[in-house]
Length: 165
Image 1 (cartoon, rainbow, N blue to C red):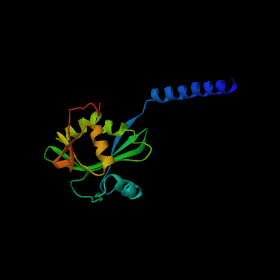
Image 2 (cartoon, one colour):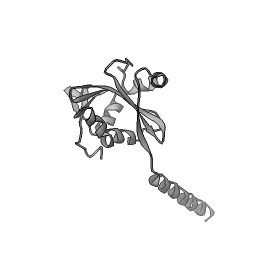
Image 3 (cartoon, helix red, strand yellow):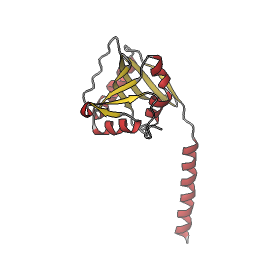
Image 4 (tube, rainbow, N blue to C red):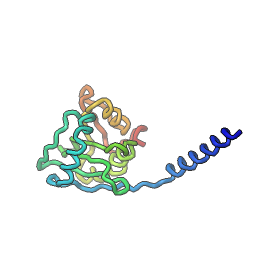
């Protein structure tokens, strides 16, 4: 009985914390990243090795057409998106989330709740390189569809898939 009592007590505590986690509201926002920002450069340098595990061909090359923004989660810079527009498409160069925040919430925020940001740029579709297998699984979960033999993935804005909902 003593062991059963202790285990029951632990289950009650675990259930309490699980409910608290489910009820917690998180705050997401976007912060534009300037091409010449020291913070942007340091962020990429710091996470370069981890970035390469998802996008092995990524190299940071700030250009005139580069558009970038940090995704802040509870005011912590937890994600970074870099790309450029080409007609009605946004070509992703980097879509990266730091370890500890990889629960798909940032991706859902960017590709569903921030669609207005893309629409204001005249973008109707987001194109991303396939990258590693883990990155491909992430893209598929966000609602991207493979194109060009799997070399890149496409997400048509305003078309939410079951995985992104």
